[in-house]
Image (cartoon, rainbow, N blue to C red; front, side):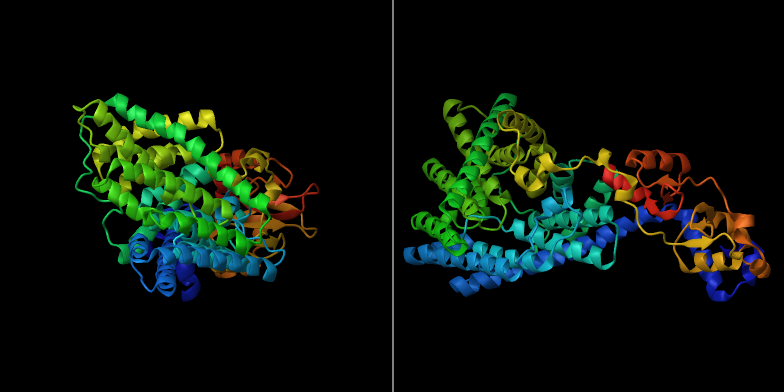
Length: 579
């Protein structure tokens, strides 16, 4: 392997020779390293996301035990409690969750805990540690006491917080930090639902609103790594399994379109109810502990006779897919779950509505299937199949992300025959819901109306400090030392006034790096090239993309109006910002 390099290299010191040979060999084999480096980061963030999700699960189990004396499924716990305890525990949990938020707001005054959705879409990738931890404590108290909210929200936020902290610790660029936080979010979703593709597509389709490979590749890697990690705790099986769930290979198209139409009508109504409940609680102007305590009290009151509304709805969804329920009970459960979720969200409980939406969709689909069987006794499709289709359809209608909904429900059930009817139902629900209500459930968090269009960005928005710069009078030996110690492909050359003159490329010098007399050679006179263009700091980002496409390099120098070198810009950062 070493024989393919010039014999002069052998005259160098052994340590410098090994460094140079490794860099040249890896550079020739792997090309632009930053893109591959992001995949490595994504895998590490994915594993970290799986571990933080497991930590959140264990904390949830511990808090359930402290509040109820039991650590099993939340619905099973509710069923074992007396009616009075079903009322008391959500109330106490709500008050505690409100106190956590109030104390966090007082202790960390002026520090706002941003949601990961906002940080990825609008922010710079920075999630503040202390106020976010206060919100996570509040979330744990809410979900552990039976409030009708999903724990996936806290799991994803914790995973995104870990990714943001790691990225800031290693001082990655802003676009790369945003991508790392996105990878943390994807890892959290994948860990919550044992769904690697669904986790990646949720962030890509809902948050980034792009399927560009520069972002989707790291998201998939992070989701897969998180799924492999979390399976040590939750196993390999999909989260929803049922002997009754076996979709026929041939489905009736019109009934499937009907469940999509139903979900498309229900989704805007559900979102409207969530918004109305939020406004009602805000209008009350109650202190946070009283507001969340009232929300917990109302949920507890409804659970006195229907303990199945406790928690995120996972157990009730599993029961629906088992098919052993009565239509009157399912209708009752659906109405109470919608109301309980609206109260929980409106009161300010910290958590997600992803899993509750799956239960509502499953219940609506199941009832739709039962009604069809009464009207059309010869219909081959089982009501349980319509329940699975309802999950995907309502999820698509509320998130406006049909591809994510299709893949996620498939991964949660692993029934390949569901794919075709899922496509029909999810696409129908998405377009019907969007026609009635253009905004999705995440519209407020994403703030799409305030987002800065990427094509309005300038080079100065992404420029970073130059890594390797030399004066035009330095020796070639000094440049060789820079290539030995720094992972750069180009060294920028400036004059005595700091104005950009040109670049020295590693591939240009590599055949001469072993010469002993490099100390007597002026590097700029022999090795400097002027074919690496400099970008003006005020130039549009699209100009930088065009320059990268012409040159094929990974980094370009950035200069001011007077030609002084100000920094450099990365092709990876440009692609991530314009993706």
